[in-house]
Image: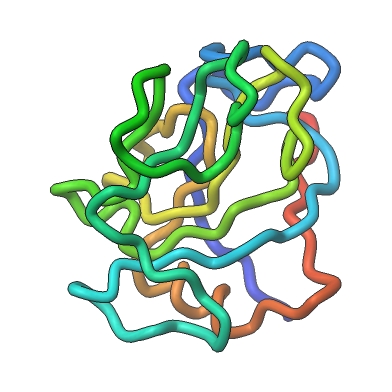
Length: 153
C-alpha cells in the first residue's frame, strides 16, 4: 500500500524456515497466511468483524508433544503454554499467522503472531512487532488474501 512500516523481529533474528525450531526466538522466512485476529475487549473495541475476544482463560500451547500444540487452549491447561491475556499491552491486538498453523508439526515452532512491540528495536520471541498505531492500521486493511512476507536478511 505504498508504506514502509518499522517492525521488530525475534531475538534469534530472521531464520531460514527450514531451520526454525521451538524456542529458538527466530522469525521464519517465507510467505505466511494470515489467520484469525484476536483482541482484548476490555482494552480495545473489536478491530474487525469476526475477531476473537481474548478471555481470562485463553492460552496458546507451545508444548510440542501435546496434541493441542500451536493452538488456542483454555485454562486449566497443564502443558507448556503462553498467556494470551497479558498484563502488558503486547497482545491487546494479535494476528495469528499461518506459520506451523493450523496443522502443527511438533517442534517446528509455535505461533508467529503479529502483535504490538515492547518498544522500537526491542526483539520479540520470534513474532513480528509493530507500534500500536501501525498495527491497528495494518489490521484494518487485512484482506482474505493478505500474507506476512518475511525476507531473508
